[in-house]
Length: 464
Image 1 (cartoon, helix red, strand yellow):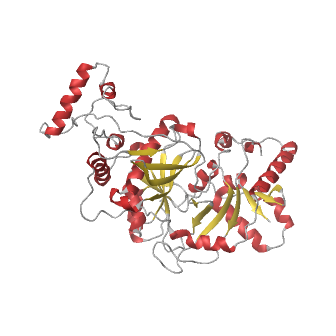
Image 2 (tube, one colour):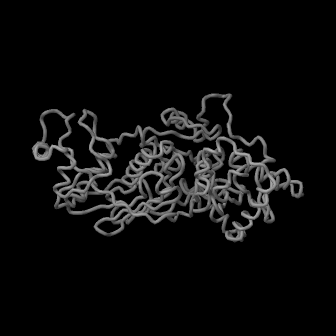
Image 3 (cartoon, rainbow, N blue to C red):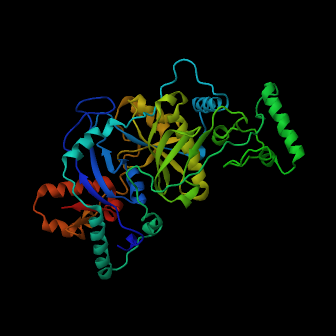
């Protein structure tokens, strides 16, 4: 197993679903069902492959709904940030934030419902109830030492086999996912973007404020031929993360809207602490903190993975719910994914967790377009527009329209699955000869079918 040379592998305990439990979405007392794993350790490449098969983590517990049996099927959804354009409602949220920061304006009347809850989803409450009943007594340090010892002894007696696809991802093997805690302590202040003046795509009849801004911009450019950005810096505005683009007739981008310049006498100052751009920050779990006038008002937990930024969780001060921080943070995370893509081209998606068509609380995620849903049978991505008609007729759907298509990473050689048993790593083909319990084989084969052939050969299934 030479491809583990960059670090220790993922180690998981698998718990097959036995009963139905209360659904956190529709509140059905016995309608939800899922399979789960407790991740003693998890590499970012393995988790990337798992979420591309419909898995999702909450802390160290990784779960996969039984899609054709659960009352509220949960489809993995991803947004394509490189093609993303904010909708009118997204722009409304960004402008609301800008007005609050610049003038201290608070929206009058009842604010719009915040789609992202500030409290933990209780959708997996039944899973945690199951975990609490289980006797998980595995010392991670001892386990890690045992694995290392086993790998060293195995490395002396086995040939080096490095499949090409594993060689391409070996840089990620050593990176670990945490329990929602940041794996790095990094602080970066995101600052407002210098103003760009009036939108030239608008008709000649403009507001007086826009005309004044345009005149000011032209005056600064005349005073400083070096350019618009430097002219604003001379007035004390720090440089933006996004340099100004050349004039065009295109509408304002997401970055233009987020990093709109504020007046010098702005009522508030909002700072977002994020990991540095690109893979320099590493891969794993991070906290994205939002500070308002020196007070923390929201924290988003994100996973930076080989191919995506995965939004795990957001919690915020309910006193600021009028700012629609769930939507605002999602837009910031989409913009951050674009930044990461500039340095790491394969990192080009933003995963938003699960989409549930029958649940308004989770259905809003479909508003971030373009986006795709994961087919629960063949694990290919299908544009959401093609999925919605089917979901109107049935809660559970196979999105792949090719009737001959199958899961390309289905478990075809279960004997090659890796097991960690009695301080030794062995293929399942060897392990099963030592077992007499028929239910053991059923559970292992179910695990292999759910994680796929690649992960079953990389991850260690812990058995005691």
